[in-house]
Image 1 (cartoon, rainbow, N blue to C red):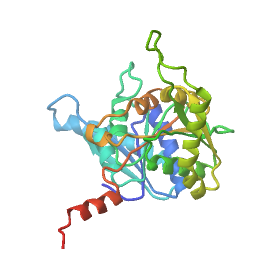
Image 2 (tube, rainbow, N blue to C red):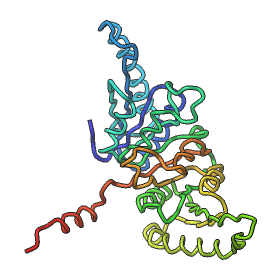
Image 3 (cartoon, rainbow, N blue to C red):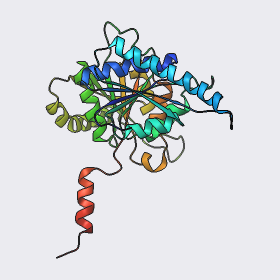
Image 4 (cartoon, one colour):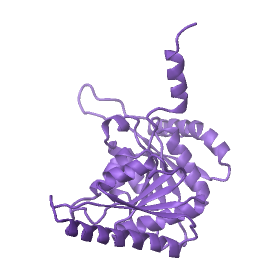
Length: 304
């Protein structure tokens, strides 16, 4: 089952998925979109009597209906679909993401081992989904803070436009300021005859801020209601975003273009998914952008 313009939430009855459900309901109400609550189950012990499988399926149905009923009773969403799937939860969420505006999941589920910082399903979906994925980390949206923090966007020259569009859109929907963080990298210095010169930190920061303003100008014009605050920080990207997440409502990071070929998250994205102090949105880049499709057709067209 796929449907355009929906929000998908993975639900397994855990506290993590309850927080994800609450965030997904909030997104649906803000965007005026329908909600699909999905739950996947599978028999984990090899061959089994049909009666045992039916018993497990009934238990899965109970979990799913509990999540859907919670959404119906705790929100104003009028279109809520319950999706039960036998198989991999990660693969089902990725499949549904192809026809969705957004996927929301918890940082871990009931199947995550205690030592895992992030569940395997969460990592798989973040690395393969076709739509933006919000991983609800930290305290989550329960209870709703009286003074919510800003949306934070990690910005580098490689950050895709899709991540900027999502961050500005989310800040506009939630009526929150947008803090744009750019990590300024200093050249490594080594003592000895070939020691590198001491970097001019102030010049590097100014250059970073100028680059940020140039990149952000069209988005600020498109979203005049969003108060954007660009900040160049002398730190690694992971350190800068971890620090910013402490007071944020949401951190937005763009997935690398190569992600769709490798199925792996970049180091910065992975660090945020595993250790941010607030929910994290991972925004994918389409395997082929619309303009690139046009370019490809043009370049392959016969000359006449």
